[in-house]
Image (cartoon, rainbow, N blue to C red; front, side, top):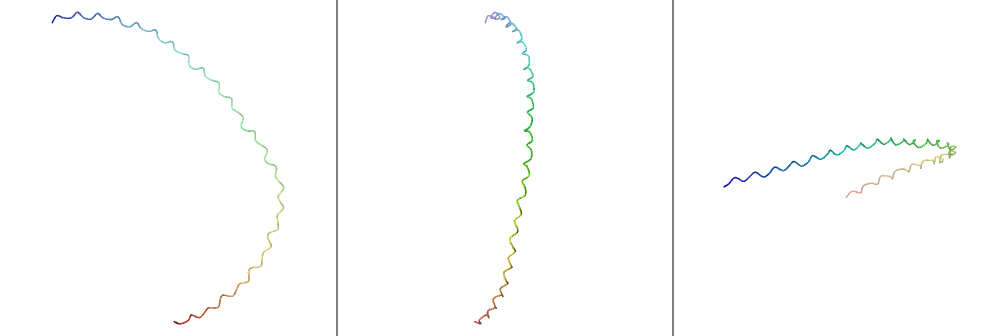
Length: 75
């Protein structure tokens, strides 16, 4: 087979000029720190609720005498 003439060398694609470097995003100034919620003055101390006298102690239920032991009926 006759040698095919070499395909003509394509000229290299022209070098693209470099994309210009974008300047980095300019540094945002820090968001100013919001002052924390201002400290609320503590709730003013409520005057103590007057102590209710405790329920008067009920006298203990008198101990009922135990049920007298029923005699076991013999079977």
